[in-house]
Image (cartoon, rainbow, N blue to C red):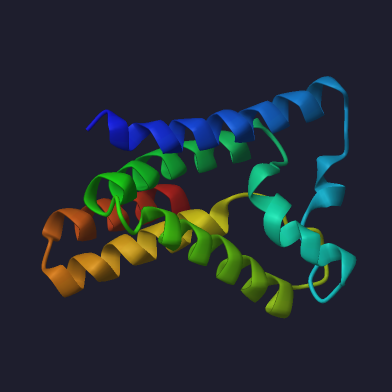
Length: 143
């Protein structure tokens, strides 16, 4: 159970470090976010999950990322990296293709991607625990 928390905690340390450095030096981190249908804005597919607008945004993403990331690592340790990369890159590309032309930041796409994967894999494998956790996180996170 402990080892499943290692990677989510490391990811959160990076996200929090980026936020604290940006806040300490008063950097406009949103400039490095995803800008749809803009060639330079495509870099945001990689950077946007590490950028957050304020402490509330960061905290909400952190709780959901930790819980869902832990579930992903615990229940699917062999697939967790592939799922994370797929959710991150495909979700980011989807935002780049379809979203309004503004800077997009945050890890919400990864949160909803993890929740979707856990829910649907729970349905397929008939694991009520996964379905319940993912729906609970979407309910709490979404509100």
